[in-house]
Image 1 (cartoon, rainbow, N blue to C red):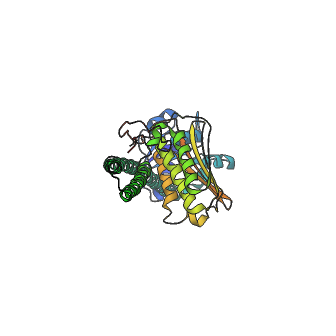
Image 2: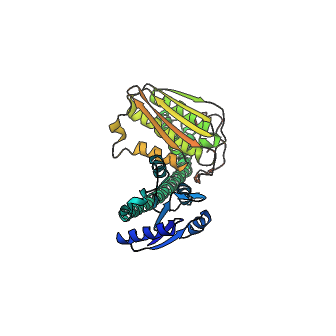
Image 3: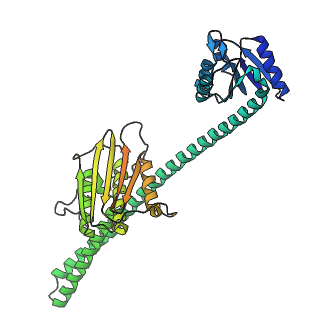
Amino acid sequence: MRVLHIEDSEEDHALVSIHLRRGGIDADIYRIDTEDALIEALDEDWDLILSDYNIPGFGGLQALEKVRGSGKLVPFILVSGEIGEDIAVQAMRNGANDYLLKSNLARLAPAAMLAMEANRTRIEKRKADLALSRSRQQLRELAQHLQASIERERAAIAREVHDDVGGSLTAVKLDLAWIARHTDNTKIAERVQQALETVQHAHEASQRIMHNLRPAILEQGLVPALHWMTDRFGKRTGIEATFRTSQESYDLPAGVPLVAYRFAQEALTNVSKHAQASKVSVDITQAGGVLSIEVTDNGKGLSPEDLAKARSFGIRGLHERAETAGGWVDISSNPDGTTLILSVPLSGPENGFIDPLMPLTGEPAAETDPDDPTKWGTL
């Protein structure tokens, strides 16, 4: 063991050394008595630091402040001939492991052993905390990678639907239209018309599937995308849906619009499936460098049991998705409804989120179809 003893008296230093050895502690004990010597000594590793309280020009509390300020986790015991209760309490609050009177040095060895054991426990806890922090960071990076991979795969599938399915539907429509123009048979014309209606339904379904897979409307901006989503949600479900925004456009880092869009999409899906609500509102605001998306409904609310379900992946997925953009999710629920709030800081270091969205064809949206957000043109 290496023990650093801050003491100006050779006699007291020798007495401390004797009591340590009597207590079964075999140590190399080094004595210093100045602040400069302490600063130099802190470049080395110590198993224990003992310090007198009264040192000419330098005190035990100042020594404790230097030790703790160095960031070293080393046990520190204050030893003094006279020390008041107020000083002892202050020393313990500042990080001292123990305090002893020089008249009671029989306690020194047991106190030193106890302080070193407590310090080993703190070191192990710090290592465990660092390992846990690294593990959480790795999980966040993995979740971010998976989300980006999922979005890329969705974009690829949407492209396949557009190119293959859409191309086939277009060819079928052209063939049916040709048949309709070149037949005088009424029954054939009726069947052709029915087939055209079926193809039109398939076309609409493919458009809906493409949009759900890849929200290309985000290329127009987050506000138009959320407005469109809220409006379509109200029409599809019959739930009164309201969209509000504090401004018409936002300058957002890459990846944040997609996270915000998917958050609102998942929140509205949960409302339609579980909330039994008659009203829902989607609000987007930016204040203090933080973008907030708030989805509020007047449904039956979420119970603590609902939030604690082991397989409650919907809520858990919202938290994971928010973390990929450096944000967080707040949930407030009662029998009168539920509020989900996504908050994403827009300043500071980049979150590193990989934006998987990219233009598919560059074709402009058909001006005659206001409900088509995909910009892939008419099939």
